[in-house]
Image (tube, rainbow over all chains, first blue to last red; front, side, top):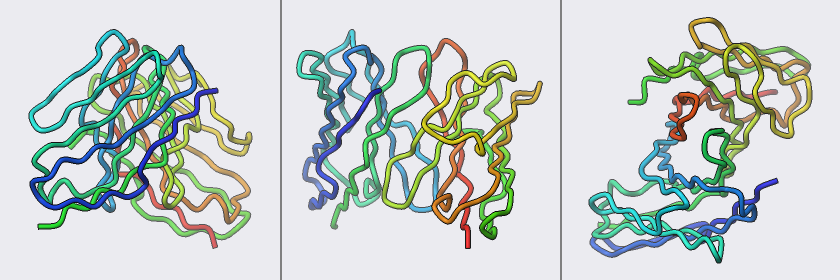
Length: 112
Length: 112
């Protein structure tokens, strides 16, 4: 089955800095890669996703890149703000089946 | 807010007991997936329901079972509770043929 590795487990940055979280996946058949943000006491919130026919996708301050050959994808957050502090999860799945395999998460702490 | 609601939000049960968790899916969504999230870990796929039938299952024993109703809401039942079943249980709704999955706030189950 699919295995998703996520690094780092914790990431501390100063407000205004950029943050990068990296994930690798094992199943070359996976072709849908969402990212979720989970705040304390809440469920995961879908923030951005990418499909394997696209190399990069941007939405305001967040972007995701995908390298199919190397089987890794990354989340980039620019101009970080304290409200970006949360746990971020990457996931992988086969498009159309919506069953997700998650990484173990990255706790992002943005200091004012 | 995703429109996915789960009840109850918190629950304490004794080892050996049975528990039922409930999920109302987002309007227009016909597929419900359940995930278990242990403390400090990413969500793990339990099973998925589509058209009232189980449509995929993760590595969980048969004492984890579910139902989906004609209005697409769903239940997760766990029999013979074990201490290791203590976790946040998440419900995600989606529409068949699409990839985006939207999570509820979860039910925090504590087994003592």
